[in-house]
Image (cartoon, rainbow, N blue to C red; front, side, top):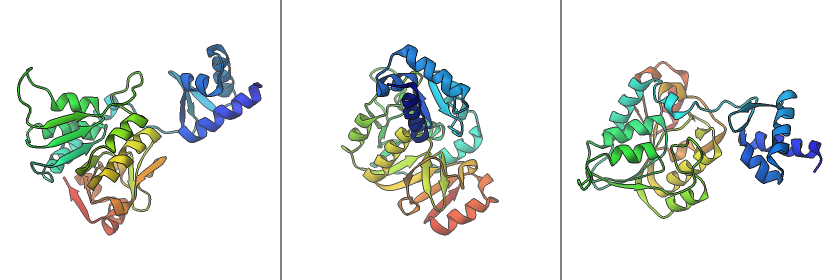
Length: 258
């Protein structure tokens, strides 16, 4: 395969995904690691992409920071949101939660409740919810969804995870989007995160979005829930003065300010 053809295919992947790993380039194009390395260097030199650890990132891509970084940003607001969200639940319910900094804090708050069945793809949430001495009975039933993992990932993902979600029905899905907009609805930057959230929305009777004020009015790369599919938005007091807050108030059934 000519280099020009290879570079065109890699640019197409970047346009769709925003980020492409070296391993995926090798697999998709059927080339050697050394050839992939040369193509990555060429794309960076031409200004078409920038090299990151393990692959390439599109120049216009703005992914969320790693979970370890996000957890420390607006932690007080996220904690308040998590506490307010727990007040919407009651014993006996089955609950989906996805992987994110706010839903990790939600898991900490859910430890004070009992009688829930909690289904998640978040390793942090599952470990938090199951923290107890061996043999001790947990307050809630915890189901960790299977699936693929990448280096440094704190969540399961991929087709297997989505298929497992479709095995369950839940009263509530509590999700933490990258952005929520009055026209575009809830969205994520990464397609694999959007696929999981979309499946959870589909399999739940109602969807509750947990989003601090910085996410209001934002539309990220991949939408996974329309405004018609969102029952409640839980946000923090910093949202009140935002024009996006007023727009969301006009289209959503319920907004709770923590």
